[in-house]
Image (cartoon, rainbow, N blue to C red; front, side):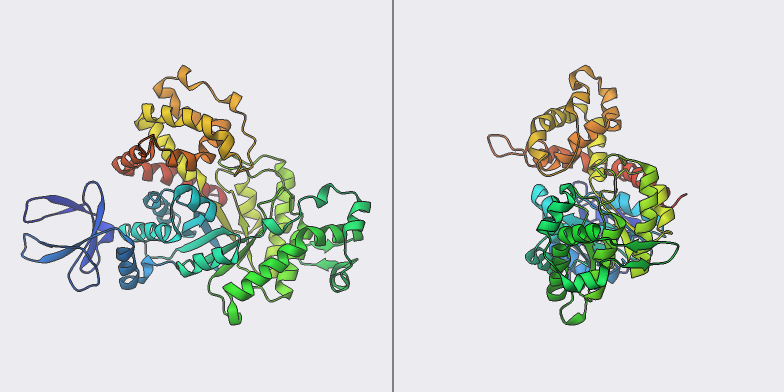
Length: 481
């Protein structure tokens, strides 16, 4: 880092990658600041320097982020899903950007979605879409990352949430259709399905008894039972996605953002024929999707590796990928954190054209750092997480067995980081993040949050390196390197 000295003799470090004409970012100890020449649109404190010049020192707030995006367009998100390889790296804490960008500088063939947050995550972390976007902008500027990145309003479910993301400047919408998918149908007998099905002559003419050759040796066909089940499970979701797209994402036919349709947040795996039906209907109705996220076979649980038959996964992934190619979009792989055994076939069968989403694993790496640097703080977090687990499990599908987590009081400080090699312990910490961050004492003070953020600030280089190695492992695995 370069140095400069103010008239008061105080010395600051400059982030060298941030140095632009008349603007840079500095490390001011407890916080970073943007330093600029006057007249560039930044608000802040005017400071005279040793060389006789005057500079504006700006806090990292929303106004500063907007000024950066106006002055340097590469610090604003853009629509990047058209690129072959993209990866969403949700940053729940607003402190992971440096490590993330370090990964994508090493793997420039993958374009990141640096701002990726769901409404659920915003609620549990008390953040806003604007805050998430601004954190990404500051990381991009600090690291001089000029090659493009995106912002995903992730798993939005309502028209209001879509508008919230779009008006906040997000360049991608992940439309979560899970509340319009009927999870009860798969368990019904054929007789029960027939009773429930309401005749749809238009869809029957298009699909019933038909076969579709979509290339690469893949044929999709619908017998009566499969057709009726598919309509009962997915027709309402297609209708909903169409309505949102035409009214909010692409009014007048011009899309305001890349559009992803997510049908993965359900208990019902999406078999290839059902994926074909959804995509065919969206295409027929003029919905232009950049990505579709099916619910793959097996289990894509939070923060741990794939659970299931990898041979079946590879066979079905081959067909899912061919369906995506046939309709001209990319497959989106959700809950992609730590699915290392599934990455090789995902990269291979998609022929290197994919969108991979990660999020919670960045939080896990942040808490693992706490276990290393402040064992006493981690012990308090861990014990509270055990108390909060039942409440947190309402929001996530996990199969965590708390009895398989070692009693933390029997572990030495040096053994604590090894808890993050235990799937049950990983999921314990993974899903309790909101409760951990929001816990307050009887005086209204945060029990953990302020101490956690102070530690992450102190050890920000260590955290960046943790993420560089961990997310870099994701990238190299799916790129087959």
